[in-house]
Amino acid sequence: MDNKKKSKKFILAIVAALLIIVAAILGFIIWYNLPINKINRAFEEGDIKEVERLFPELTKDEDIDSVSARLKDMAGNYYDDYLDGDMSYDDTMTYFKLVSRKVLKKDKQVTKLINNINEIEQSRTDFNEALILMKDEDYLGAISLFEQVSKLDKANYKKATTKIEECKTAYCEKAIETADELIESGDYEGALEVIKEALEILPDDEALLGKLAEIMSYMDVDLEGKYTSTIDLGDLIAGELGLTGYNVYFPAVLVLELSDDKLKIYVDPDSIESALNALTANEESMEAVYSLADEYGINKKEADILIALTYGGSYAKFIMDNFGGEIQDALDDFTHEVKCHADSNYIYIGTTDKNDNNYLTYSDNGTSIKLESYKGNDSILSLLPYPSMWTLGDGVKGSF
Image 1 (cartoon, rainbow, N blue to C red):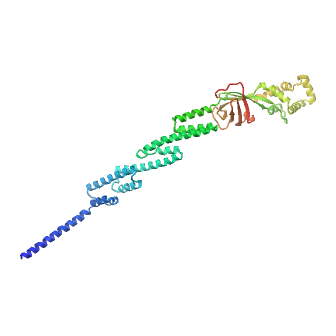
Image 2 (cartoon, rainbow, N blue to C red):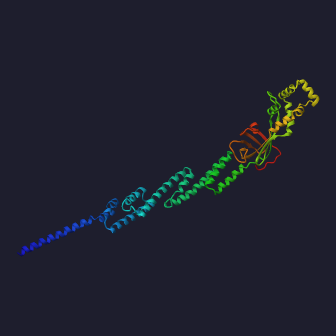
């Protein structure tokens, strides 16, 4: 009987122990599979995707806060690693996209970090592209991109600031080099345009301002004075006298008078007598004169006798006495006065500034000017031969 009792107690003890063990095992299994413990093991294994998957299973506020805090701490570490260049943009954003999908979806700090990362990534792209443009000597394009580098981009922001100054210096040097080449070729307008464009970017640059002053000194023209040129106005005189079919020679001296803002052209009255002498000394021109006498019924022989008796043989005096008024009217019509503006290559007509439809092209050697061509309205200027040389007279050149 005692043995039976002992056996029964032993069995009961074993059963109790087994129950305890089973309960413990079951308790461990339950504990082991708690969402927070699964999440902790996922943290240890670095399986953030699993953490994110299990997070909705958490029910306790302290567990939710704990996991959220750990993920936020990791987000800060990822951000720091990205800033230091120890982690790529893709790997960094893989983490942030994962944790912001559910766990930290509404977390303002994480949202800010994501925005910062995107800003920094764009900044790094801009910086690298700017370096390429700088190497290709597209300094303005490089400056534009360097200026977009973010202050958050600690690795590149100070570098970008330095590179901007380097680009400005290089751009300035390139502009001056280009301007010097244009100056050497005589294209002062082109050189001026290059420097003005550069000054729009660097308005206070002393080197550019100095080059501008240099170009302006080259472009200062000194044309003021009276210039003369002997030009055959025979066709004009013949037309006024009604002579057709004859090549009349009348080499009059024209005066081109330039002042600050005016151009005046006229026939030197003192040259009329010499021009008439040249006309009457020209055989073909005299044929035209004889035709005038013939209109009055006087032949060539009779005309010579008449001129010898009345004008001492000077047909020039005869023409001046009988046709001086018509000749003077023709020469007066040749007088032309107009506003003008000059630079180193053009004399702009009818304006005190530039225009693109009424101008003379010219070259100047200090003692004479050569009128190369004329573009403009019908005027006396259109009747001049081009090119034509004009010699400076006694007039003193001044500032145009």
